[in-house]
Every structure is written in C-alpha cells, then in structure tokens.
Amino acid sequence: MATQTSEPDRDDRAPTPQTLAPTGRAPAGRAVRRLVLALACAATAMAGLDIAIVNVALASIQHDLGAGPGTLHWVVVAYGLLLGGFLLLGGRLADHLGRRRIFLIGLTVFTGASFLAGAAQDAGQLIVARGVQGFGAALVVPAALSLLAVTFAEGPERDRAFGLFGAVGGLAGTVGVVVGGLLASGPGWRWSFFINVPIGVVLIAIALAFLARDGRSDRVGRLDVAGATTATGGLLLAVSALHHAVEHGWFSGSTLVSFAAAAVLLAVFVRVEARSAAPLIPAVLLRNRSLVTANLTAFLGLCALLSFIFVGSLLMQQVLGYSSAQAGVAWLATTATVFVAAMAGARLVTRVGVRGLLLLGLSLVVVGALWMARMPADAGYLADLLPAFLLVGVGFGFCEPAVQLGALSGVAPSDAGLASGLVQTMCEIGGAAGVAAVSTVLVAGSGLDGFHAAFAFIALLALLGVVTAAVGFVRRGGRRDIGSGTTQCDRTSARHAMIAPDSAPCPE
Image (cartoon, rainbow, N blue to C red; front, side):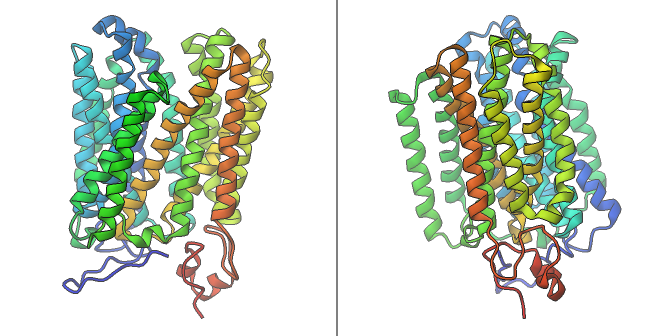
C-alpha cells in the first residue's frame, strides 16, 4: 500500500482518505461531497464529449473552412494528442499546486479554447484551438478524479462515486457522436464548440463559489521539472507516432523515427526519475500492485472498447449502408447500457471485488467482439448488432468503476492526482494504440473478411485484459480483493481492509 511519507520541515501531513475533505482541513459533509461529485462528473463529461463530437461534422468543417484531406484529421487528432500527452503532468500539477486551482485553470483554458474553436476562420486556427482544448482537458480530468479520491472515504460511498464518474465518462464519448451529428445538421458545426462556453462558465462559477481553497496539506513538495518535461515529451511523441502510423504505415521512416524519439525521451525520463530526490512518479506508486495492474488493464480495455466502436461504425456505414446519423443513433444502446452497468458495477464491486468485476466485464467484451466476428453481410440491427452492443456496453460499464477503484486504492492523498493522471493517460494511449493497431488489421483484410479479422483481434485485446486482471489482482492469505465484502481484516481494521493486494499484511 502506498504510504504517506513525512518531511522533516513540515507537520501538516495529509490526513487519510477517511478524514480528508477537498481542502484537507476538515471532513467533507454530505452536501459538499455531492457537490464535488456533480462538478467532477459535469467537467469530465464536457471534456469526454469533445473527443468524438466533431467526428460526424468533419465534412461540414471541410466545406466551410476549405481544409484539405491531409489536414482535416488533425481536427480530431490535435485534441487527443494534447489530452493524452499532458494527463500525467496535469495529475502531478493537481498534487503540487492544489486540486481546486488546477481544476479551475483547466476549465478556464478549455472554455476559452472552445470559444476560439467555434470562431475559427481557417483550419489552422481550429486545429490550434483543438490542441489547447486538449491541454485544458488534461488538467480537468485528473484534477476532477483526484478531488473525488480525497473527498470520499474508501468504501461503498466512494465506490458509488467512482461508478457514477465512470458512467458519465463512458457515456460522454458515445453521446458525443450523436450530439455532434444533431448540432452539425441543426445550428451548425460551430455549436459543437460554442455549447461548451456557457456550460464551462457555469461550472467555473460554481467551483469558485463552493469549493474551498486549497490548503497546504493539499500540496506535495517541489515539482520534478526534468521528469515532467521528458515524460510529457515522450508521451506526446508516442501518441503522435501512433496516429502517424495509421496514415503513413508502421514501418515508414518517419513513423520509426517518431517511435525512436519517444523511446529515447521515455528512457531519459526513467534515468531522471532514478536520480531525482522528488521524482514525478514516486517509487512507492510503482510498488503498488493494484495501481500497476489497474493501469495495464485500463490500457487493454480501452484498446478493445475504442477499437470496437471504430470498427463497428465503419461496418455499419461501409457494409450495412447506415448513414452517419443512423450509425450514431445505433450506438445509443451501448451508451445507455454503459451508464446503467457502471452504476450497478459500483454496487456490485463491494460484493465481488475489483478483480471479479473486471474479469466479468472484460469477458463480456470478448464475447461481444466474437459475436461481431461472425457478422453476415446482410446483418440486421436487432438480431445481429444489438446483442453485441449490449454485451460490450455492460462489460465496459462494469470495468469503469473497477479500474478507477483499483488505481486509487492504497494511494496516499498527496499522490491521488498523479495516480488519476496515470490511469487516464493509459486509457488515452490505449485508445489510440487500439485504433491504430486494428486499422492495420482491417486494411490487411478485404471486405467483410477484414471486419471479421478486426473484431477477432479486438476479442484478443480484451482477453489479454482478462489475463492481466486475473494475474495482477490476486488474493493472498486472509486479505480480500479490493472492494469486496467483509473478512477478518475488516473486523480488525476497516481501513487496512481496503488495501492493494501487495501491501502490508492485515494488522494483528
């Protein structure tokens, strides 16, 4: 279990999650906890919505701004690139400068960039604004999850909070496709960005009025600038290389150079961390088996999920003859199922634990992908597509709260922002890697056979996630799986019962 380290020159140690309020000064009351949950969910939904909201509006954007085919995809890529590259830094900044402060800065940047994107007069302006949006989201998301981690004590209430947070996050990505289509066909594509402005202003006003200021105990020591620079640069290059590989090939010279540069920067980051007195990623986090396993599982899970949505959308439009709007509406079944399953999963995790819920959820994704791998050319929605969409929706809904609970269990409050940034980074990189890899499989095939191979590959990714969760979240001795029911540890010490699988034994 990650432990709180003490510093010789300070006596304001951060309280345990059981007593830490948003400011670290006093226990958070029920009204405060609900307000923090509402703010975190709303801000994360806004950021998640913009991942996919422009996908169905690209044709309109191209017509209005005169963007060429080689430029247009950067309207989508720029957002994901900056979001994935800066999430880790955003999480550490939340720990270093205060969660409330970074949450507000991120919201302000995101809202301002949304207005600039809506007002863009050419493709270059829009792409830059989208990148700034992504940077703002990279500050908002880990700060929001960190606020939840230190506001809710480990136990059923935190599980429910993470369940709702995960449900909203999963809901936002799929709803973005539908909302983007409706706005593009109604008031116009610019409202895909303008809609964020009033929402962002309201959220900023609420946060300023009701979130208490950050206290000294909300902050850790100095920021590892060298580690932050090399880690962010390496992640940016890695995500960029994944997108580049889809367009130019995995073995093209430019792709290989990008991957090599990313590897060099990340290797330098490892060396810097080994010598740093205040590393960006403390060694105690890397020894937290639960955190490491949750991150690997999140990577593989998002690889499978976003690849499933990507290939499923292409199948509906290229093989089954669906329009963009019809394809977007078809995903509503998955959207609604993710939300309901995540809320149910938040309660179910207290009975079956993180490991059990992840095994169940990812197994459902495997079955859903294999169901699509035998899809006929004349497939109908109700008989052929809907069963798979529901299975994947339930499976991913179960995984959302389980991954977040696993990633933050046993993590000290001073590292909650970093742990949040880590798991969100793995999700973003996992999604990018999955889409890039499955695109290669899809192109290598021909017609419907290519889609069958792509779905079989997605099933393999989800199966690897099952293996990772099964091996990583292990039961040892009298200890219980994270989030599961009462054991001897609970009767001895409720706090030590909610620990990572590799942490200290149950107290005597």
